[in-house]
Length: 388
Image (tube, rainbow, N blue to C red; front, top):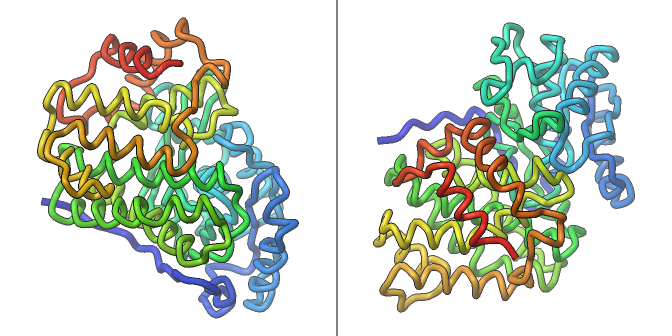
């Protein structure tokens, strides 16, 4: 059994940004949302996007303040700025943080207030989204989150140390332009981090208790693509075939989260990067992965599924669940990320009990997708086993 609703028009493939101007624009005033870095500017992606929008008859404004793991204060400011310039649609140009932030900006622009007013998890106020959010055109420049095709945007509250999504059916992007040519300049390390985020979306979906024939088909296809092509994309960023295959797998990860769900590994990581905002999300997932999945294997949560995952990762002779851990470590080594350490980001074990508590509250809904229950003590144990 599954439900599938994705109202996003997708333009996928090399050169697709050049077709943006041919699309029906949802308004006349576009606020382009980008990061507080320089990549989309120096690589020409911003100017190309502006040109496409101008060809389509839209006036453009720029909000260039989104940080990695976007803060609710920044997202709220973006919403107020969109209202100030009277933007009637958004163009999210950047990585997952930009795409996620745009969803919160779209809500605040139409409804006012603070974006945390509309968050339904943790300390969010759960206020109804009364006015329709601004439409979003999503143009990812990285391959990892799949946020271009789902209805949620993950936002961090630094004061409460929570990282959790704002979600609503109205937040699916209207159009997604997935052009792998925009990903050629992503450095190797971040290519790996983002690729593993996509990988874990699909691995987690495959072991979730909500898995279906549909979600399994999507997940295994994505995992096989990433196992084959992510090391190539990391080794040679100009390998366009590899970039395209990784981008496709990332897109499938977004679909996977719509038709199924991730599991609590993402809850655990959100606490890590909520406490330490400089920690890239994908890096945090990599740090947790061996200890996290070993816990589920040792408790025989779904032995046959871990064997199948090992085969999807390329270990064709897999016969026992622990072969999945071996295959995962092999892929991490091939991508140069096997030696990541929490301590390098200032994480200390004394934080684990509070991280576990917040993970179980701000991201409680993903624990419901686990095949076996995890207590706060179990979460602390996983953190401790992952720590180095």
